[in-house]
Image 1 (tube, helix red, strand yellow):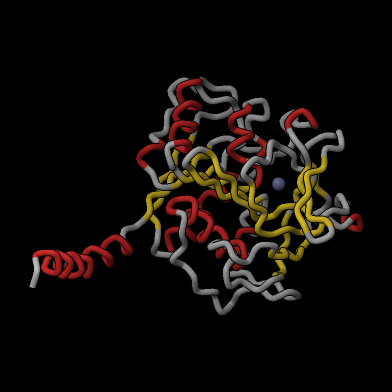
Image 2 (cartoon, rainbow, N blue to C red; image 1 turned 60 degrees about the horizontal axis):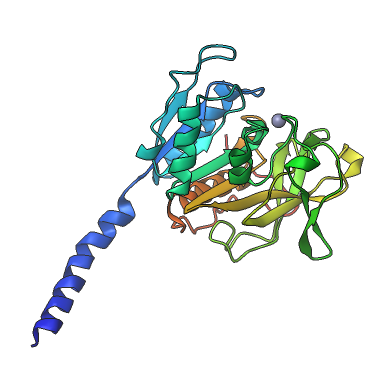
Length: 293
Ligand code: ZN
């Protein structure tokens, strides 16, 4: 045996022990909340539960001071985590905290944006670049295009107008447009999401955006008449952002489609790959919702 083959054998032997340990290592999640025009006290525990019950994550929560209070001391240690989940829609953070989030994502950190988290910080340009698209918060054509699925492809629509709108809540089909991505791979091409608020007319810089799934905002329910992004990713520096406008309420978050996409999305944001590849047996079909109690 040459030295080379011995060291190769040793490396292979070591890998037997190292690989399972790293696969079993839990990813550290930080959920940020504390202000939202939604029921964040109801939704954060649901997000935490689905992530924890997957066995893939450990979860901490950073809760900001209430609206209108002094935010200067709110300084979550983003860098200590593999993925930051924003359930936050509220007052500006301190310049240092905003910079810390940018540094964390640029440096390779994962960020997950859930529903009204994309309403936050409308006039913080780097936040809009990170999240790709957002709604309300003064957003309009100056913030970037609408992004829609038309005639078999994703298009940028520069039509002037406000960013952010929704019709009345209802169950709606989520249609996978890129099934090759780790977040959507193996999922049924269409699933019926439980009753939720279907955000439409989101707009933003939409740089390095990959729209994985859309939903049709039917004018019959007050929607835009467009196929709107419902699951997408954004690249920012070395970091990865997973974004879903789904998840208005705790009830919406009990959809097995939402649960699956949340778990995969957070893992992908953290690591750029997904080990939770199994599709749950109770996953919704194209015409039947599926919720867990
Ligand atoms: Zn909502």
